[in-house]
Length: 301
Image (tube, rainbow, N blue to C red):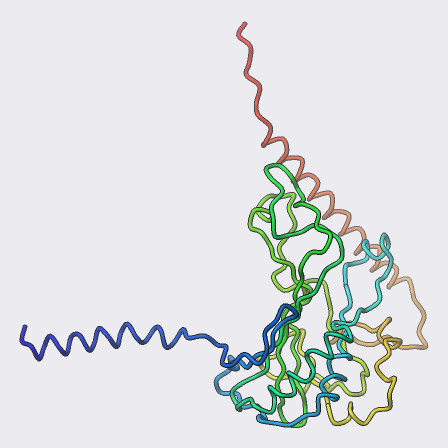
C-alpha cells in the first residue's frame, strides 16, 4: 500500500474510534455544587429537539415554594392499608434541604442554555431498617439491619413557557445488592423508590392541568405555574387537601354520593386478589426452601 493510502486508512480508523467517544460523552455539563449533602448540576436535556426557556431568572424564594409543595403518598394497596392504616402524604424535601437546593437551582436556571436542565440530588438518612447495600449471607431473606441507611432523592427542573417542570426521578432510594434480589423470598428491586408511590403538589391551584405535560414527561413530573404560586398567600402549602387526594388521572368522586355496594364489592375483590398473591408467594418460598435442603442418602437394605 502506498504512503498516501496508508495515511488515508489511518485517518478513517481514527475517525471510527473517535465517533463512539463523542456519541457516548457524559450528559453532565457543569457541576454547580457537590458536597456530602448532595449535588446540583447542569445536564443536557435528553430530547435534543426540545428547547427550554433558558436562561431565566426566578427568585430562590419561588423555587423554595415549588420544592416545599412536593409531597409523596404511599399507595400500598387495600391489604396494607387495613393492616398498617392509611398513610398520609409526606413532604419530599425538608426545610433544610429546601434551603440548600433553592438558591443553587435558581442559579442553575439563570445559567442554563435552552438545551439544558438543572439536575439535583439530596443525600438523606433513612429510618432504621434493613440495609439493601450488603447481603446477609446464604439462605437469609433479609440483609443486615442498619440504624441509619443512606437514601437519595433526585430530580430535574427546567422552565418552559410560564411553567416550571419538576420531575422526581428518585425518592429515598437505597442501593440494591444483586445478592438480595434473585431468590423467590427476596424483595423485588426498586431502582427509583417510586414504586407504589404517587408524587403530588400543593397548593393544587398552582399545578397546571395534564394538557401542559410534554411528550417526554414522566408520571412523577409536576408542571407548576410559578408566577401564580408566588402570589398565593402564605400558608397555602398545608397538606390538608392532600390527605384524601386521589392519584392523578383518576376521576374525583361526587361529594354528594355515598359508598355503595359496588364500591364495597370492588374493595373485597381487591383484598381477595392480594390474599391469593400472598398465598402464591408463600408457596414459592416453601418450594424454594425444600429444593435448597440437602437430600439424605438412602440407607442400603
